[in-house]
Length: 288
Image 1 (spheres, one colour):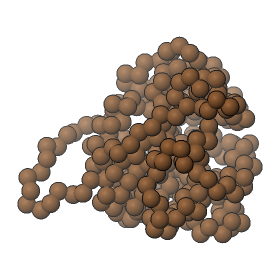
Image 2 (cartoon, one colour):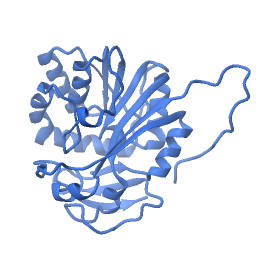
Image 3 (cartoon, rainbow, N blue to C red):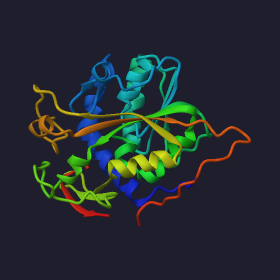
């Protein structure tokens, strides 16, 4: 596995070091103290959407864990083991402080979610809420999640919607017009006066479905989430407003299961080959 981080990961690590100092470290304790699992910017209750599998006894890896509040919730709800992976030391330091304070027994590893230095088939559930699912290349991190999962293990992740991304323009907030093509969308480089340049990844629903399939997954569930009627703008993640997200979905959750290997002696299925095409967010610089 490569030991050196790609250039975009180094840039994103700098962004999250600054973001941890500005917001996530201070908000971590409140999040860790919560008992209910809530999704994303609009804090959609898991009890309303029921997208997670039964967590009891599962060994879980969180890819791009940040301050690991979501991993803490998974442990509270029955996970046997939770290991958080992240490349940002500042975020992991905060996560370790919270883990010591709350005594939940989480584990942490400083590593790139696209190349995790752990054995194959080590976990029952791989998870990402705006971690690897946003900041890592899906052509890399999804096959890596498949490698880390046992047969019939599951992958659950949250990311931005297609509609949100095609309405992201050269200004602070997402607008109400289509401003960038969805066709060929993959890597988006952004600049920000406060935290500096960053890189996100987004591919269309159709292409993401193909990546999951090629990586050995079958899709079990898919949800598009809206802001509730009483939602207000988030105090820190202000790129999407509550008014916008009440009208159009800004967040989506995918759930997929790793297929069992073909039984010995059976005729293998047709192989499908594919390669990857050669937000802190405010001013997008380039898209490839």
